[in-house]
Image (tube, rainbow, N blue to C red; front, side):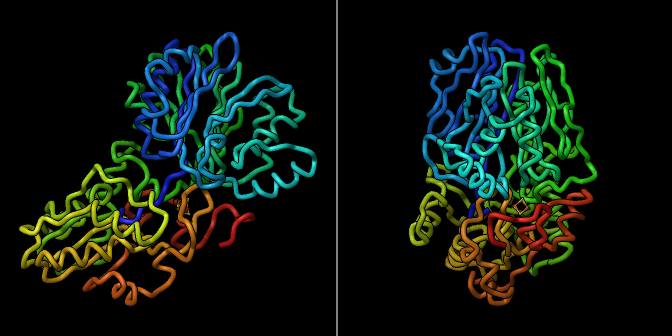
Amino acid sequence: MTDELREACGVFGIVGRRDAAALTAEALFSLQHRGQESAGIAVLDDDGIHLHKGMGLVHEVFGADDILQLKGYSAIGHVRYSTTGASRPENAQPLYVRSHLGPFALGHNGNLVDAQAARDRLERQGAIFQTTTDTEVVAHLMARSQGGSLEAAFQDALTQLSGGYAFTLLTPNGVLGARDPFGIRPLVLGRLQGMPCLASETCALTAIGADFVREVEPGEVVQLDLMGDVHVLRPGDPAHEKLCAFELIYFARPDSRYGGESIYQARRRLGQQLAREAPAPADVVLGVPDSSLPAAEGYAAELGLRQELGLVKNRYVARTFIHPAQQSRESGVQRKLTVVAEVVRGRRVALIDDSLVRGTTMRHLTRLLREAGATEVHVRIASPRYLHPCHYGIDTSNRDELIAVAAGENALRGLIGADSLRFLSAQGVLRATGRPDHCLACFTGEYPVPVQDGEI
Ligand code: SF4
């Protein structure tokens, strides 16, 4: 993707392992793409719950000594990028709470659309918040629940809130996992030598050598007890699933699997579908590295064209989104991507990207390709026009910054300096992924969970 969207977070949990902290750290490394602002691990031993968290990447937050000191036999871990709540240390997760029902630690991926209303209500009732996250709303609701256990209080809190979420909860009895009723955010169940674990993506299971068992179903709450048994506390309903389409288009790692196939294969099929809907009069196909390369491969194969390495990414430049101002984003882009002139000189280029959010990088790339000698640049986007902000845990920043909102397709083509510009259709996304439904709200404006706190 040229103008990066930011995933909210990644979660992990495991029970019954003496090396729970080390396994969790390993899992968090593999989930790093889901959040780079902070990382944390909470472990459970006979003395209670112990926590280490901080700002930065996993390897910056956890040295070998930190992991050794986190002794325990069950753990949850979290990597965060803030979509609600500022980027500051107290908002790092897991969130640790001592309640009248016992201690617990909570990790959260996603967004609760009614969290602000719940927070206002709780504050009127005297609740004092330590963070600005919506996750703490769940903690306060749990602390006030009349449910006789942490497990009951957790479910009680979830029934009072809605949104797109995946939670892990560490209690003295093990680890709970929960997914929102539409399964907008992913959560999978695995097993490592008999002991169960939970993760945002299967790449975390692979990283620790665990086997994939199944996806946690939409609306399901599971408990992994300390003996390694998995209990379904609240059954889910797969018929309601509307997994975030952007997990398949961009966020998830290509070596993760969902619905029985790899994300890489899904992206390749998005490219093939795009080629069927919008073939370009091109001599060569280029993908914007890295996330768009599978779609470019599918696009080229479908049209019998060659995909070549025409764009090179400098991996050691800070990610463009880190710069808050548009101007510094532009300079970040210039340092980040360069053109292999021999690939494009004198040729018509089909340039494939997986989405077009702000348009900054694409404008720059079309110019670079022409300067390198491309005779035509046809831009093809392997997702529909991004027109509506996400309220379920993906930072789409300000609606005014979404380039597709501001202009029709032809004006957009002019803005990014392309000879032609086409997008994949929403129906095409469903056709390519082969799943009956997805959340497609940022393309269609049809939000599966009504938005209360935010403005559509
Ligand atoms: S609105 Fe878009 S980014 Fe947000 S959950 Fe739905 S598909 Fe994903």
